[in-house]
Image (cartoon, rainbow, N blue to C red; front, side):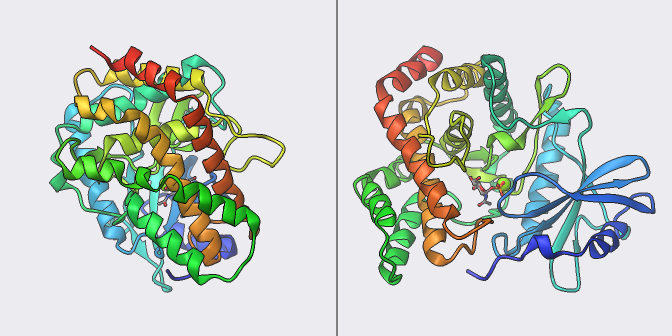
Length: 367
Ligand code: GN1
Ligand code: MG
């Protein structure tokens, strides 16, 4: 994989020049870095009294940004027809030439989106109301896209949830680097002792038990916007990974992010925990907006999906650490190893609470 572009090095004057090429009022006002994303470079732009989100799409990850843009258009027009309540997606602002995105002199792809006003993101879930709101939002997304045939969407990121593929690449990277680090060896033992988990959902999908559906791909807490006053979840952002996939990948990813109250970058003094009350709230909200959507096999495999996503992300972080931090943004070498350990600790806590999680699934989805 090529080196990731270094977003923090983009001079502000260049950013202003890029922003001015979109159909927004001149002159461009303030420009600030925005969000905690690990892949794209994101900036908040002010112009003509309005705010916008300017993003450079990481070309080392997304080789064909036109697919992302086509998917966004397909999704937006599907949702406009259906008008689901309280499911807003940020709209795209075209370039002055009427294109959906622009390519700069260094072949970087840029796009501009509206900045949804009155909305906030949460760093942590604080109460059951917020947990329910998260689940209800993800459910609304799945329910309202269930009638969009998956073949109308392109694959924007091939192999994105190919867990067996991630497993293979981790084993390969481990074999090819010559570092001796007990922390890495422990992680690898943890992964290898659970190798059968990697292919569980793929197999069920291959056997026709669980269908391909429209997925968000990255429904972590940062990507859900809440109304600043009412506290209701109102919008989903970061739609680059919207593509055909498995519903259980989305649900598992949302839970691994939200139920880990200490976040993806906790320090070593904190043992990451999978919070059952938050899980309860999210599943209850999700069940309330997805009546009859889930197949029995999806419900039967839900626990494994919850266990799988932190397992997969842990493997991705660990591989990137071994490969020299080429995929996920880091502040220092070692951060991806640490992130991997947090995800594996979460897997272990999920396994420790397996019975209670299965019980919550039964409570919300049986019958
Ligand atoms: C990446 O860029 P960001 O933070 O939205 C990653 C997700 C991971 C997430 C972990 C395209 O998302 O898959 O779950 O980091 N996105 C991609 O924080 O790989
Ligand atoms: Mg993302």
